[in-house]
Amino acid sequence: MLTVEPASAGARLDRWLSERLTDLSRARLQSLIRGGLVRVDGAASKAAHRLRGGERVEVEVPPPADETLTPESVPLSIVYEDPHVLVVDKPAGMVVHPGAGRSGGTLAAAILAHAPTTAGVGGPRRPGIVHRLDKDTSGLLVVAKTPQAYDDLVEQLAARTVTRRYLAVVHGRVRANEAVVDAPIGRHPTDRVKMAIRPAGRGKRAVTRYRVLERFADFTLLAVRLETGRTHQIRVHLASLGHPVVGDSVYGKPRSRSPIPLDGYALHATGLAFVHPAFRKAIECAAPIPPRIERLLLHLRDGR
Image (cartoon, rainbow, N blue to C red):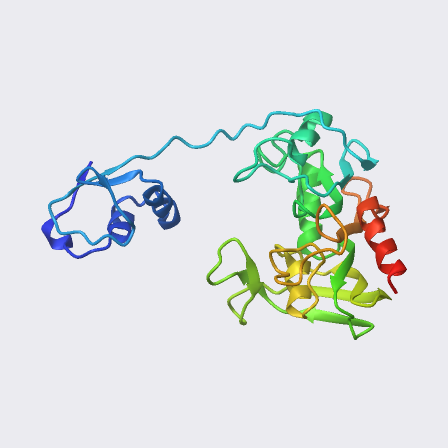
C-alpha cells in the first residue's frame, strides 16, 4: 500500500508508480493498470489518472508465469537430425513457442518430447530454438540440441552466414525480375502487434532479396532470400512494395484473400544452409512445397 504525498498532486498514476516501483518496468505497470490490479482509494484507475495527493494506492502483482514447458508427443517432419542439431519442416498453423493466447500444441513442446536434451538450451520455453517462423508460415527451422550448438548457430545467424530461402506467392504482377529491399524494420508506431518500415535510426536494418519464378494474371511466385532476420521481415517488405503475401490479412489489407482456401500464408521456408556446429561441414536442407501452396499454384496456372 502506497500513499500519495501532497507534492505529487497532478502527477499521472503510471508515472508516479514507475518512480516508486523501480523493479517493475513501465510496460509492466501499465499492464497491471489495464488489468485492474492497481486501485486508487479502492477503485481501479487508468494510467492517465491524475492524482490529487493523499490517496492510498494498492498494487497487486501476480506471481510470475510458470516458465516450465510440458513435452507433447506431436509428430514432427524431420529433415535432418544428429546428436547436435535437428532440422524440422514446420506446418502452417503451428506456433513455434508458447506465448500470449497459446500454451499447448507448440513446436517447442513437440521438440522437447522428441529430444529431451534440448531442455534449458536457449531458454526454458524455447528448447534449442535458434530462430522462428510465424504461426501461419511453413518450412524449415534448425534446432540446437546442445548449449554449444546453440551458441554456435546463434553466432552464425548474427554473422549472416546462415542461408534461408523461401517461396512466396504475392498479390499483383511483380515487374522487376529480381531486386533487393533494404529498409529498416521496427515496431509499428501505433499498432504494437505489427512491425513496419521505419525511418533510419528507428528500426533495425533489414535486407530481403527476391527473384520472380512465375507470373500469373494477378499474382507472382517469388524466390526470396533473407540476409537479416527481423520479425515479419518478408511480409513487411513485400507488402511495402504493394505485393503482400497471399493470405496475410495483417499486412495485406485489403488485398489479402487467397483465391482458394489456403490455411495459412503462401509463404514457405524451402531452403536452409549452415555450417554444422560440431563437424564444421556445410549442411544444406530442402523442404518441398506443401500441398496447400501446390493447390494454389495449380489454381493460378489453370486461370491463365
